[in-house]
Amino acid sequence: MEMLAWSESVSDGELYYLEDYLIKQGWASEGSQAIGWISLVITVEGYAHLAELATKQINSSQGFVAMWFDDSMTEAYEKGIGPGIEDAGYKPLRIDKKEHANKIDDAIIAEIRRSRFVVTDFTHGDSGMRGGVYYEAGFAHGLGVPVFFMCRKDVLDKIHFDTRQYNHIDWTTPEELRKRLAERISAVIGDRPNKLPKA
Image (cartoon, rainbow, N blue to C red; front, side, top):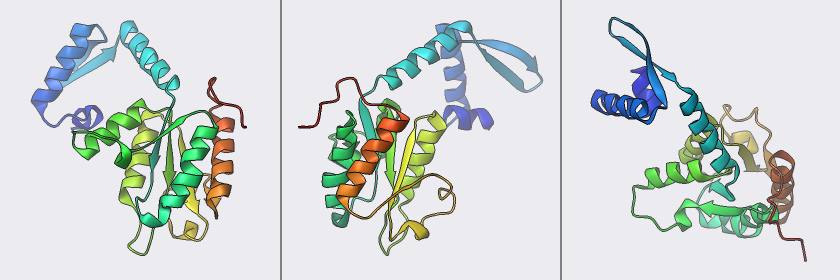
């Protein structure tokens, strides 16, 4: 069951196929075996492949945005989050603005994997917390993708306790959000080499 969860497989057959594929690629080999247990060991080639994948992510210019897609947040995105990411030299991606033919969950997972970082805004309305934002932050954390936490100041004391220990950008205006987000990205990740100078 653990291997099914770790590999995101939905059946034993899928797991065995994945195991066979990793071995054929030279990225894993069978390790010690016990009754009912098979272990895989990552090979040197497997570690090299993981390093290559990490390099691709580090070279990504995309910042994935997870937030409440409500009309009340339009200005926060258009004048704050989007421009803040661009000010640090990256391209923002909101999944509701991307054309795709997949299930939305598959598109979200694929884009988080392609991103250099994830910006998560936990602002919500009277209907309660946005579960998708928490899921996307957790998924990014599991992949080792940096996550930037934010929340409008008047909602900050209403967010879930699991994320309160992280250093949130608590914002009031979109202009403040833009400045602080750009500064946070630049401080933690660094500016992209192709960052445009401010006019």
